[in-house]
Image (cartoon, rainbow, N blue to C red):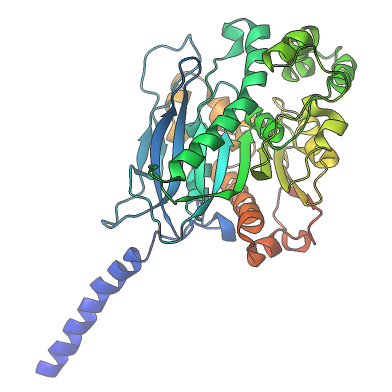
Length: 415
């Protein structure tokens, strides 16, 4: 009888101890949905987040950083982001965005240095607009730095001046972000030794996708751009989303703001940074560069976009970038029937969007947001593991014969 009680006690101990040990090994390996593909499952690292500011009297740039973190107390990854709202007519309110990270957690330096991903948000948005994405990348051993570009919604200011200014400023912001990341990981920096500045990629959504392509070395071809704008001049909706009314009459001013006087003929000089080794535009605007300007980009690229996008039409964004970029390694993920906001944080994590009637900006009419985000995370993570970490299994996951998801149109040059 005594022996039986001992055995029963041991079994009870195992019931309680084994789950505890499993929790201490790392975060739960789950996706947003039970049917999440391989690289949509949470990675092996806990995720930390901190905020910094690149100080400058004229153009300070707030930053949000996500990174592999320590979690000795096994806390739940839960954080509230407080974004800077750039729509100047917004009333006071609670604009919290809920994320899944550990605020100010200590970095996990065991496997450092980690590759760096710079993420550029959409026009007049903010980094937490896409929080699920950098959080997920950090869980796979990347440091993600997202600038909060100083700008506001152009319809509420001078539409010409605002578009021109951010078009010129954003690529320069990326150079400053890379310099700041270098100081963070340098001797005496807050993240000393954490970031691998030799393995850097850039991503971005919408005008953040434009920013990513420019930083990757795409060059303006305004002669081609003028031709595009003339071709769509009879369709005001398309002309507006291509920024034709703002840029075409003001090319000289755009050149001046970009530090180019007189305005160049032919392709403009590159605004790219040679530290960037891969580019990942999400519904990114590509039309300013034209065929020849995109051909200047030779680093690996993965472009994603919704095929029914009305803000950055697929034909002028993801499809256009894939068709004309000069990269030998390139892939295209077309999310069929999806709209522009598919890449944004879902409404249930930023309920204030519903309060102001902005449901469009946090949902999709066709896709379940969790399913879409699982797929976005899967493709992006596999791509970055492949090009920045040389992961053979991730590379294999992106081969055409291994990509078979309903609603996904996929093309690649990968072998």
